[in-house]
Length: 64
Image (tube, rainbow, N blue to C red; front, side, top):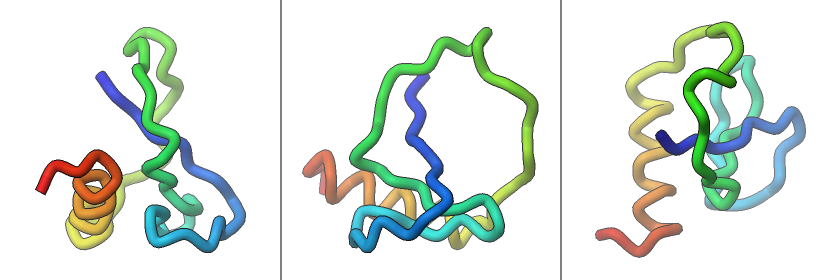
């Protein structure tokens, strides 16, 4: 499982997507996550927000 960091301040990067009230998802912080160490679910992001994260990840990882 992979995860990316959410930060509370805008990093002013095209590779960071605003995730509603949760902050910014910074795709350059991608790392392996141990499922058992995940905390509680804080909310759900919109399909549009997740699509923007997907686009940013593809750009960051040169997958397109």
